[in-house]
Length: 508
Ligand code: C2E
Ligand code: CA
Ligand code: CA
Image (cartoon, rainbow, N blue to C red; front, side, top):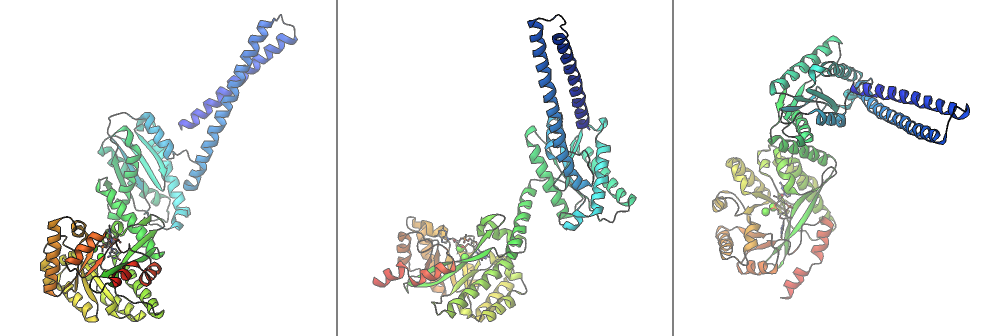
């Protein structure tokens, strides 16, 4: 409303100055042409005055027209949402207005409100009913919150949400929420709109001058969490920032699975006794359209929390089988591949059948597959874990215990779990060449493995000193950047057919 007044005022001012200008011009003409007793000085003064007034008028016209133009754009944008041009703030005006009128150190909140679920289909967003509903709601905002008694409330519409700034207490926030809840349902009833609305509100305190944008973002996040948790009104909590991140990663993960954004890389394993490469580890890679390249460390946890890990693990399993089938077809060197399986696979009732059917589909010998599990697996129901591992081994697969040495009760797990191999964690290998204690721990693990009939793999081997030490300690297999980083399948094939390590060892 303030905008209209300003525009009208500008227009009146322009007209006033235009009249003044023409009056001066008239007097000037009279003076010059009617020979009204002029001299050079009066002409000069008249000329200067006329020019100043002229510039004034032009400037006023320009500002009036540009502000009108801007407002038109803004109103056109409104028209798309509200089905009619309404004087409704957008985010920028909203923030500007708050900064102009905000009282420092007074309690204030930002409320994010949307009556429509964020998962709502596009059709609803384009529907006549929703436009009508938003139109009535917007008019309610204008009527209710744009008057003198409500100076402490500002509002705008931004990315499908109404944002309300409320200078006051939490009670004032709840008051606005109740008003909006009541009005939204009464509008639906009054105008008989065929629209299913679900009101969710998220609000966040504004604590200092600088964090208005942050409070807005947080209120929006809280609104989404409110919907997710089915809570009509929710106040912001720090932990929602993480929840929101998880949700957005989970969404990107689900899209990534649909859009084939995942790849499998291979990292070779070198046998110290055979002096040849004896297998490799399959490691998943995600090149996300939305997030760019994401490391497994950045998404495996989220995938586990959101129940998407099974799909990822199965994708890797199937891709490995496809790649093995291809190698077999081309008569290439065929070495076992180890695949990482999450703890959650042990709770998946279809897991065993799923992998059996993939093995059959690609005609893969299960002896070419190793399953990597972590000690974390012991937190699962031991009956489930042990019976599943036994079934996998009966099929002919080998079971490998990853990250050995991290956590606790390691040696116990060697006794309890039906495993063939242990992989000594990189943290021990890092220090093995210069730290006596680390070397002794690794030595003990290797010896204990030998007693138990369990093979040992050292992971994360990066330099020749570590290789030498591990040879002396009689470790069976080593894996790490010293030989190769995880690489795509085509590079892995080339690596196996020509690499410096096997030749060097053969000559020794
Ligand atoms: P992990 O199973 O312990 O895998 C070894 C990780 O160490 C890999 O990281 C590998 O790239 C890295 N690595 C290997 N050698 C070296 C080395 O010499 N130096 C250094 N600095 N790093 C080395 P990546 O690929 O980022 O995988 C991280 C973790 O993500 C894996 O740890 C595994 O727990 C998980 N992961 C990867 N792929 C899968 C998968 O397909 N399914 C499941 N459930 N988890 C996976
Ligand atoms: Ca692993
Ligand atoms: Ca590991």
